[in-house]
Image (cartoon, one colour):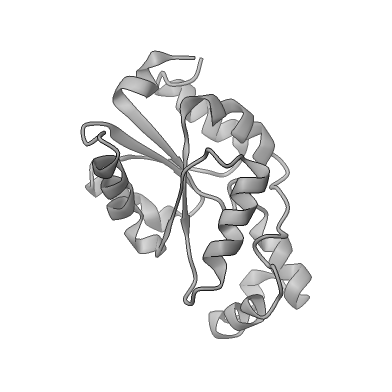
Length: 170
């Protein structure tokens, strides 16, 4: 394990589209692709699906990414839809699949940078640079504006290579 991550950086990992296969879950719940659904129709359908987030499967290469980063004290940083129904389901999934010791931060996606910086401050690590692995490009600008490093997740191999390029993984 490289000591650089422990001393200078804190790794944050998104769930949906990175570790968890959200799109397959949407197809299973609605019979349609997420891109075919207006958000006003998709979110109520998902919210009405018992245990939607809790029952999602891994992305095909999600375990590969997790195996590569789990020894570096990653924190899950995941966005939530409106309402209170999704958070306990996401926490249950994380506890079961990743382990109860993995910190999980939830909140509105647009606030990810703020949530990460608050978590670092609260945990006595205000000087660490946050690194986020996320599949949503619109998160990049606010993340980097807050001083973080953003890795656009397209597949596990690419994210692992990006971490190697930063000298975090060997």
